[in-house]
Amino acid sequence: MILLYCLLLTLWSPTRGSEECPAGCYCHPLKNVPVPDAMLPFGHTIALKVNCHALADPEALDFSNLPENTIHLDLAKYGLKAIDKNDFVAVPWLEKLDLQGNQISSIQEGSFIRLKYLEILDLSRNNLRVISPDMFDGKSLY
Image 1 (cartoon, rainbow, N blue to C red):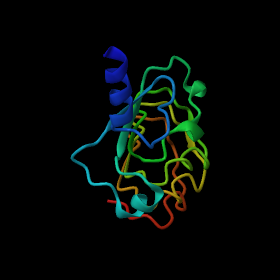
Image 2: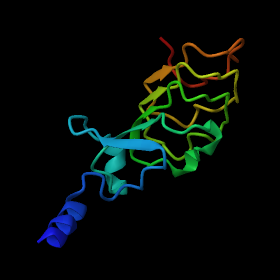
Image 3: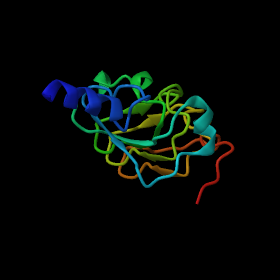
Image 4: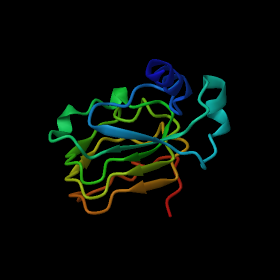
C-alpha cells in the first residue's frame, strides 16, 4: 500500500515534466500564477519559483541546471560577486529575478538581453559602481 502511495505521489508531482531542482535550491510550483503562453508548446504547465539560499559556496550553483520553467528566481543574499552573460540562458521565461543583498560588483554586458519576459529585477544592496548604458538594451526601466 505504501509503495502504491509513493508511486501515485511521484506521478502526480506538480513539477512533473520539469527539470530537477538543483542541489541547495528549493523549487516551488506557483499554482495561482498563469504559465506564460509561450511556455505551453514546450510542455510546461506549471511555473516555478526557485529559491537558492542554502549553498555555502555561491560558485557551487550551476546556473545551467536551473529548471527551464522557472519564472521567479530568488538569489537574494547568495554571495554572488559577478553576473556573466550566460548565467540565465537556461531560464528564458524568467519574469522576476531577485539579486538583492549580494556582493555583485560587475555585470557582463548582455546578461539580461535574452530575458525578454523579465519584468522585475532587484539589484539593490550590491557593490555596483557603474552600470553600462547598454546593460538593459531593449528593456524598459522604471
